[in-house]
Length: 73
Image 1 (spheres, rainbow, N blue to C red):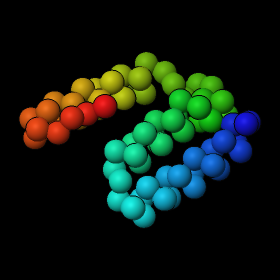
Image 2: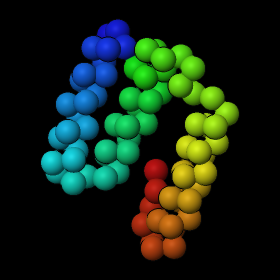
Image 3: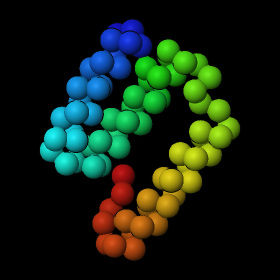
Image 4: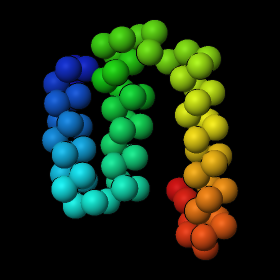
């Protein structure tokens, strides 16, 4: 599936996750959207800044969820 068509499909998933309040699934959809169609449509979307930001947020999330006793994927 081409970038724009794939993005529309993921947007439908994102909307569904928001309606259900499933934050973990929402994060998975958003990451899949960034890794797939966004970078297909805008190849320079991933750069040192965005990659560093994503890595730092992931590390912080694991730290927070670990402290609360939750498991992070």
